[in-house]
Image (cartoon, rainbow, N blue to C red; front, side, top):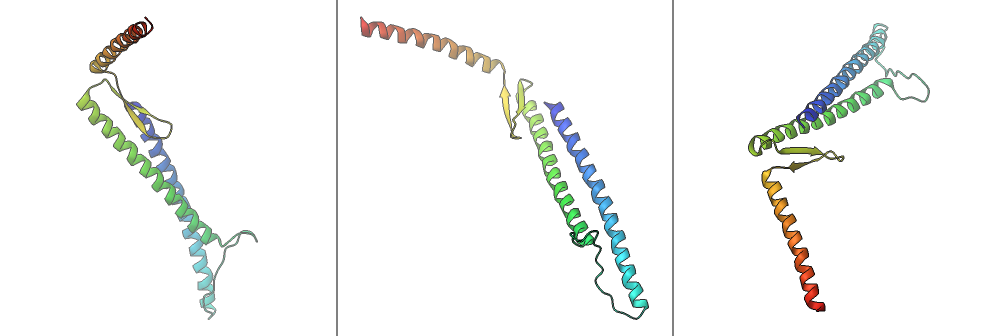
Length: 154
């Protein structure tokens, strides 16, 4: 199970690095667009005019590109936060698993469930002994039921 935690941790760290690179890339693009916007307004001031809104509109159906870049960067930040939360959870699960293993031994496993949570599976001598006793008791119970049926019908 420790391998699963490490693999998931590595995948999540890789995703965070990918999102970070996208955030950096689009922040740089946004900065260049803001510099262009300022350049237009500087040109207006040189001519004695006041700054006006500068809208970068790549198509007639699109919004202002600067607004869209800001929204995109915020969405990337949200995604990074989500992945970081998942990473923190995986790290905590890994630490919990190590503590459980230290306290209860190597006969304890963590089983990941499809919903993302986990369960603890124990298969130690005490578990085996309890199971054997239950099996013997079931066998005895079955015999007792048979005896009671025979008494009732007899």
